[in-house]
Image (cartoon, rainbow, N blue to C red; front, top):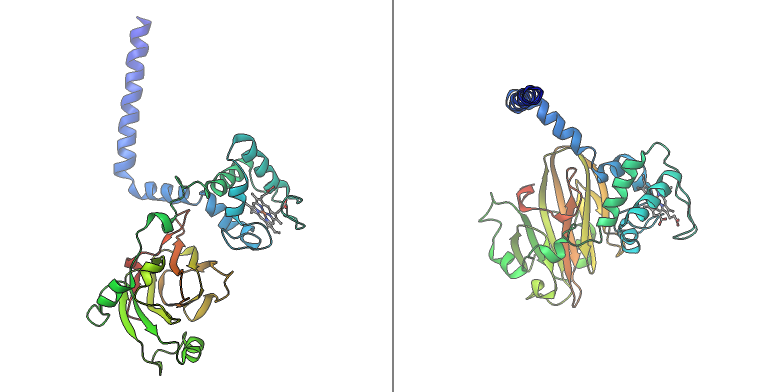
Length: 302
Ligand code: HEC
């Protein structure tokens, strides 16, 4: 008797629960959306974005502290290492990587510190972090030259021009502002993305020429974006007139706060005689790993 009673009682509970769940999802979509965006702000990289970590660490570029990729290459992601590194972030200290000290982070909860460490250590795990250089098919310049920007004015992508090395320096210096260069391009085309992996992608170019991609980038969500220019030679990125990545070989990466909007963008690269690779990647505020900046955010119109 008792059994049956409790059985129907739990059935009633399940019924109430099911109705409740259906109602929650159907009747209150707005609340559900807020729930989702709350969850978003708790990702490991968001803790890093909102704390002071980026003052001393980049994901890949050297800074005061080791890069997150270096840290991930040094340690196994086992339970005790995760816990040890989480404590180190909270307590600060030094002695492992050099003479610099990490500051204390006493307000960071241990569970969040562990979440951060798990993300850092995942950077060297290729099953989690799908490196676009290995996983995203590259573009070829020969294809780019077949797409004429004039014919594809409405298309997504960037206008890509190749300039001779003759008079190159002058052009290179003025490139952020100079739209009508006195030097005429050798080739023009439309590149849907900036992702040329390996020397074959640059054929038929060989000699030292300047590659310049320009247009605008549309940002739909406000937040902190990471940009990375993988370059085997000298390359740089201008956004909204500011040089965000400079031609120095060690400068690849930047975290920038962006509002929603459309920004002019210029990517320049000086080709080397061989072994060229050029890839423009980003991490959007709702993502945790780099991916190739996709064509739908680019437009040839400034
Ligand atoms: C004031 C600069 C500074 C800030 C801010 C900073 N770090 Fe560090 N961090 C360092 C230095 C320097 C080291 C190397 C310490 C050593 O050699 O033991 C380091 C090391 C680390 C390590 C590796 C520790 C080890 O023992 O190998 C991790 C993980 C780390 N930091 C994560 C973070 C996170 C996450 C934040 C933000 C919450 C942060 N750091 C903020 C400077 C900083």
